[in-house]
Image (tube, rainbow, N blue to C red; front, side):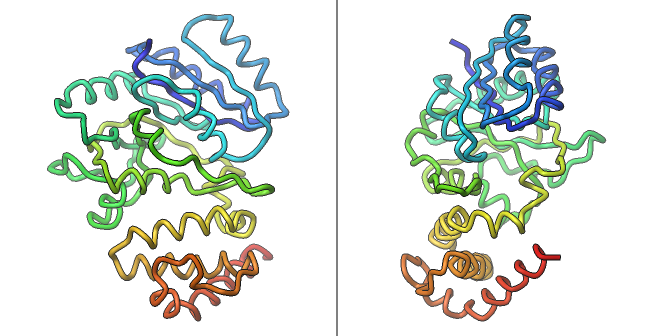
Length: 293
């Protein structure tokens, strides 16, 4: 059995998925499987993947499901993956040639893995720029600590222990919604486990128009249940007032989209939410204004 599963959720991305494939073919360490989760594509994705399977250059597993969103694709992947480690490389991204080699080397060098959930590495843009390097003296941390305590911005690439992932609930599925913030899983894992921190680049990223990173305000409107779930967890585990306040503002907006008028129901930080009420209403109006422009 291979040690790592690289999984790629994809939806109508046949035009760019080849970049990801080519980067995996040229990996210096082949101790991995590639799992493609096709979230209802209507283009030539399946035929393209079948042609790669016939090439037999890397181990490929293909799974098709009806379109339910990125979080559902992650759910499907976590049900299928049976390797020790897993990492998500999006369909419009790719790995540096030594990406797998670096992940497996860092993991092998860790002597005490009992309380370690995985590795936090870096994403880089095609021009080599990186948004937010991790302090060199920070050996272990959670994503929340990196973002809130150390004030480090920019996407990070998270490698996960598969057995740890399976300790936690899958992302909730709501009919007609296509997004639950993926960070909710990392947040829950961080209450029990730490991650190895690394400034090695595991992924080269590119944001395409129509991708979830470019349509966030619209997604607030389209997936209020998903964001409500996220904001409740973020408030529950936060000890930072300003961060909790900002989450409460968005929680209020999600409630308004869902016509849930009792803002303190199922709310872990009721007092802060009441303080944030007028600001949450203003934030809600701002979202409505921006998405209608």
